[in-house]
Image 1 (tube, rainbow, N blue to C red):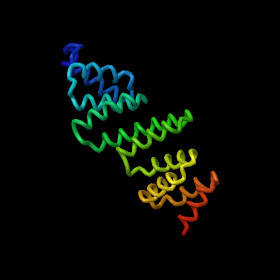
Image 2 (cartoon, rainbow, N blue to C red):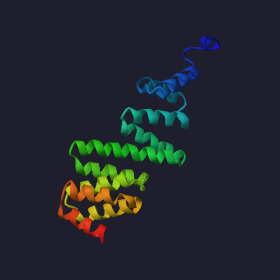
Image 3 (cartoon, helix red, strand yellow):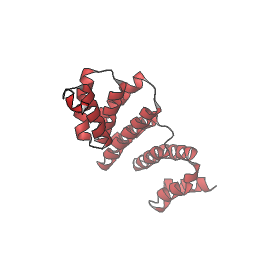
Image 4 (tube, one colour):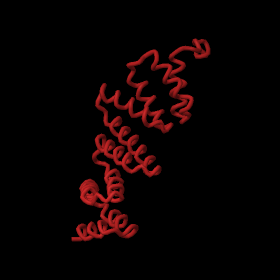
Length: 178
């Protein structure tokens, strides 16, 4: 009942609503509330983090990346590193789908700056490098993926030899099997 007596423009209500919308995955309604709250409290780490998460969920990767970087400047947080890498991976995936392999490579390489232990990023890079005929980079990427995830031999060989036989893939298969 006391909730009804609060000022409807109260930041407390905005924050509660933003969190409710956010938790309910109604990101379109959460975003303007987080934005309004940040306008009044520009340095609030939690608000900024929540807004970045909402932007990320809405596939607004460029803005979420900008906020994640600001957050990292304030505090080193593994969740932020992980989210940054995920946003760059999504941008890379989008540009692959648009056949812009050079830009996709840039995004995947940027993702590695924030999550160098993600073997899938190296696999994506290997595929893109192979399309560009960059054999040495293909090998480097596959080797790094194997270092991170040694149990991935069958997947690597299947992707490079069985699905798309190439001379590079054949060489890799021989190297892995020896």
